[in-house]
Length: 302
Ligand SMILES: CC(C)=CCC/C(C)=C/CC/C(C)=C/COP(=O)(O)OP(=O)(O)O
Image 1 (tube, rainbow, N blue to C red):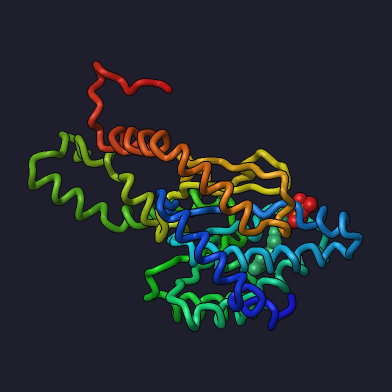
Image 2: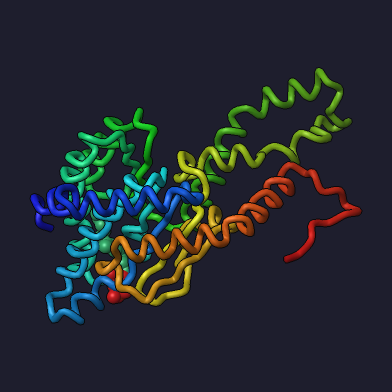
C-alpha cells in the first residue's frame, strides 16, 4: 500500500470540495448510521488488471481507507469491515500472510487518519489468534482512540458470527455462574425458591438479551442499516448474522477495489428510498423483544 497517497489523493483539491458539496445534498435525506462491508473481489480485480494476486488486496485496503473517509464526511457514524474471517486461515499461507501484512501496515496509517479526526478504531474478533506484532499495536490504537465518539471504525479480524455467539454464551455463563449464590440468596429472601432449593423463576431468566448483547464483539456499535457485499456475491459468509436481521443487503457487481463514491451514493439512495420500510421492521423487532405483542395478536408477517 502506498503510504503517502492515501490521505493526499482524496483529501485535498477540488475533488474533495465537489464530493463534500455532493454529500451535503445527500444529507437532505436520512443518512444510515452504520454501514458494514464484505470486501469481495480483490483477487479477481488483480486478475482482471493482470497484476499479482496480492496487489488486489493492496488496492482493496486502499479502497477501504477511502471509504472510511467518505463515510466520515457523509455523516455516517459507524463503518464495519470484514477484513479476515477465521475460515480464511484455511487459505494458502501466502494469502494469509498478505492480509496479516496489510493489517500490520494499516495500523500506522489509521493512526495518521485519526490524528485529525475523532474516529474510534475498534478491532473485533478473536484477537488472541493474531500474532503479537499485530495484536499489541492494534490494542494500543483501540485504547488511544477509545474516547472518540463521533465515528467508530470496526475492523472485524479473525471473526465469524459463530465464534462471536460462542464467545457471548461462554462469557455470559461465566459471569452468571459467579453470581448464582447471590441470585439464589435474593430469590430465597423473596420466597422464590422451591422445596428442593431450585429457583422458580430465576433460572429460566438467568441470561437475558442485555447480557448477550453486552458480550458481543460488536457491542459498541448499533446494528448495521446497510450491508454491502461486492464481487457479485449474495451470501453473508458468517458475518454479523446476529446484527443484520433488519438491514438492507446491497450486493454489488463491482469488485471491492473498484468501490468508490458512486457505489456509496447508490446504496445510500436505495436506503433513503426504503427507509420507512426498514424503520417499521426495526420497530416491530424492538416491540417483539420488549414483549409488547400479546399472544392473541401475533405480529403480522410481511
Ligand atoms: C486495512 C485492511 C487490513 C484491509 C483488508 C484488506 C482486504 C481487502 C481484505 C479482504 C479479505 C478477503 C478475504 C476478501 C475475500 O475475497 P478475495 O479478496 O480473496 O477475492 P476474490 O473474491 O476475488 O476471490
